[in-house]
Length: 306
Length: 306
Image 1 (cartoon, each protein chain N blue to C red):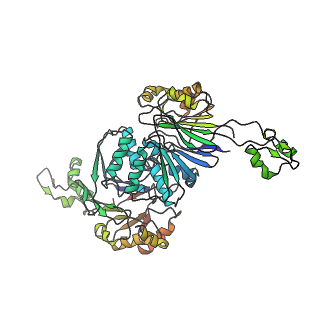
Image 2 (spheres, each protein chain N blue to C red):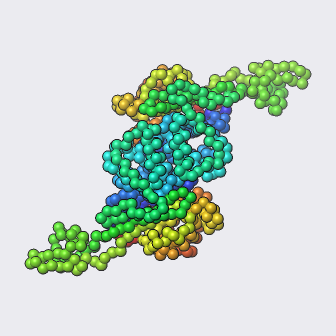
Image 3 (spheres, each protein chain N blue to C red):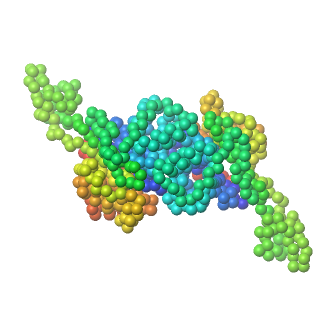
C-alpha cells in the first residue's frame, strides 16, 4: 500500500527561486492529504503533476503566511475547475474567518462542499479516522497556536505466502479475503488457517509532521519510534539564539529530537532563505542523527517499507 | 526618463506552469508601482530580478484572488527583510480588512508603515499625483467592484540640442536647469532663450491598465489616445458568450476598444488557462487592431518613446 510524500515546498517564511514555502502531499493508498499550503502550492502541484482534484483533505499547521497563503488560490482554482467532491480543511478556527472573508469579497459561492474542522492547539486529538488510517494532532511550541500532524496506519493488508497459496491451489477470487485476514476452506471442507497463507505481519507505518516549533522535548511521546519524522530546521547551529528567539529549531536540535524519540528516519525542512545551499544543515544534523535527509521540492519520499 | 513595465503574470484565474496570475511592475523614472499582485508575485520578482525593496506603491484592481492573493506574502517578506520605508497600497476598502485579519492572526506588527488608500469604484479619481506623474482610476465593468489605472506623465524633462549647447559653450553644471526649462545667461549677460537650447518638446506618455472588464465603451474617454493600453482578453472569439456571462472580454473586443479609443499600442493579457498557446488570440486581435502584442511574463515593455 502506498504511503508516500511529495515535497512541494520546504522554505521558511521568505521564498527563494526554486524553494517554495511549506507544502507536502501525502498519498496513503490513494487517499490524498495536503499538509500545509504555502503561497504557490497550486503552481507546485502543476509542476510536480499532483492532481488537485484528488486532494480530499487539507491540513494547515498554523496561521503564519508561509503555511497557508496558497490555500485561497487553490480553493478558487478547484471551484473554477468544476470540483464537486467535498473537501475537508483542518486548521485553527480563525482560518475559516480568513476563508469566509475572501469568499464573500470575491462574491464566490464554492460549487463544492467545504467541511471545516477547527483544530485545538492545546491538546492532541484525533482529527481523521477510517478503517486503516488515523491522523492526530501534535501540540507544537511556536509563537502562535501551531499543531503538527501524526499519520498512522491502523492495520495493513497481509502479504501472501505464494508458496503456500500455490500448494493449496487457492483460486484468485479468494486472495483478497486472505490478505484481509480470513482463513481458507477448501473443496473438502478443510480449513487452512490464515497465518499459514500469509507472510509474517508487517510493521504499521507512521509519519510525523512537525513544523514550526522551538526545540521542545514534550513532543517526543507523540512521535516516539515513527518511521519518518519531518522536523523543521530553520537555522544552522550558528543561529541557535535566533532559533530560540523566533521559536524555531536548528538542524542539530531537530536531530536531537529524532534521536531521543528513536525515530527511524528524519527529514529536515523549513530552511531559512539565508542558506542558499543546504549541505551544512544536513551535515550538522547527521552529526547527531545519521539517518537524516533534506526535504527537497519535487522529491518523492516513501514512509517505511512498502 | 524610464517608463517601463515588467510583466510578472498574465494568466486569468487558474495558473499554468510559467503563466502566473496578474502582476506588473511599472518603473517611472525609478518610482516603482506594482499593479495587481496575484499569487506567486514575490517569486516572480525573484525570477525577473525586480527588487521588492524598491516598490513604493501597490495598486490592486479588485478582490478576485488572481489579482491580490500574492499581496500578504509580499508584505510578510518585506517585513521579514527589514523594510522600513513606507508602503502605499491602493484598493477596494475591504482589502484592508483582509490584510488586517491576516496580520492579526499571524501576530504580526509590520515594521514599516503601510498607508492604505481606499479606492472608490463608482467614479474616476486621481489617486497619486507628484510633480511629473499622475495616476487616476478607470471604472471597469466586472462582476465585483473593479478599477483600472491610468498612468500619465505631466511634464517631461527637455532633451538638449547638443549642437547649440556646444555653440554657447555652456558648462555641464547648468545643463540640468536647461533641461528643466530655464534660459541660460552667459558671462557677458546675454540671455539665450531655453527653446534655442532644447529639442522640440516630446509627447507626454501614458499607460492604461484595464483588467478585468466586460466589453464596455464607457472606458473609451478615459483611455483615449494612450501610448499603451493593457486590456484583458480572457477569451477567444469562439467564447464570446462566456466572456459576456463572466464579465470578461475577448481578444477582438479588446482590440475594438483599442481602435475606437485610438490608442497607439495594445497589449492583451489575462489569458484563460484553456489557451496553452496564445497566437490565435493575438491573430484575432490583430484583425481589428494591428499594433497588438501579448503580455508575456518576463517581458520588458516600454511605454511610448524614450
